[in-house]
Amino acid sequence: MKKFISLFILFFSLLNSNLVAKEHIMILELKNGTVEIELYPDKAPNHVKRFKDLANRGMYDNVVFHRVIDGFMAQSGDVKFGKSDGKEFNLNLAGTGGSDLPNLKAEFSDIPHVRGILSAARSADPNSANSQFFICFEAAPHLDRQYSVFGKVIKGMEFVDSIKKGDPNSGSVKEPDKIISLKSK
Image (cartoon, rainbow, N blue to C red):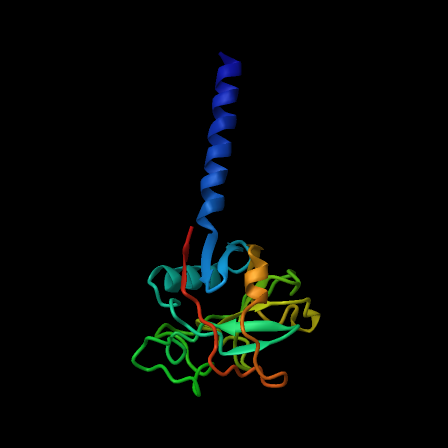
């Protein structure tokens, strides 16, 4: 009987951990393929909550990658001016807007900005992150402990690599690629 109970507990634990793990996986659809992102709620709970909320409400769908610098990062998430099918879409203003929700306080951690990291974009004010985020193409140690890391690409980074690059200096993209959809797994 003890063996049966032990097996039952082990099975339940594995099942439960799998459910918890799926709860923190996001699916990002890009023109060239599907990207899986693992979120870090233990490191940046408020950023994860905001990201999931906006994604699951469809706010990130059709939002452009307005700033993309080869060898550095791809930035998106301006749900106000960067939503290509939205009433306020304006590519010249993309990157200056956010959601109607209040800005988030910084949640800096010891997670380094390496290839595939998802981090919150913000202004010079560390507590100004709202809806925008970026994905690192390569390591960017100068951003460590200065931006809130809240996830990492775990599958499909080659599709992130294929996002249309912008001006080498500003990252500004003419006719940018966009998020087709972003939702929880």
